[in-house]
Amino acid sequence: MQEGARRVAEFRHWLRVLDIDARDLRQLFMIVDEDESGEIDHDEFIEAMYRMKNTESKTATKFVKHMVSKLEHEQQTLKSDLGTSLATLTSGLEKSIRDSEKAVELVTEERQ
Image (cartoon, rainbow, N blue to C red; front, side, top):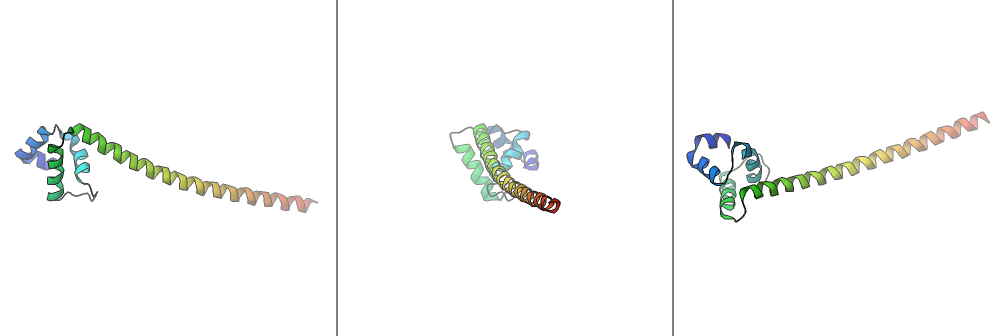
């Protein structure tokens, strides 16, 4: 996208119309790449640009909405991962406690 912004005058014009500067290009790429493939095909790009230009929302609002959506998804993933890690840790700790209790019982029995 950065190369296109440098080389294609019409693309630069649309970026100005949408109030998108060079710093915003990465975010724009992530918005346009809806299938998260890491690539944008012509249809995907044209559809996204059309939607951005012809909706009432401002471009900045779209950026914020996309970022919030992505952060929410990442938060849910982290929450799930944390829950799994906590369950694994708790299980391991409980097993260690049981093993320690058994060891104490054996030592106590041997001393008697």
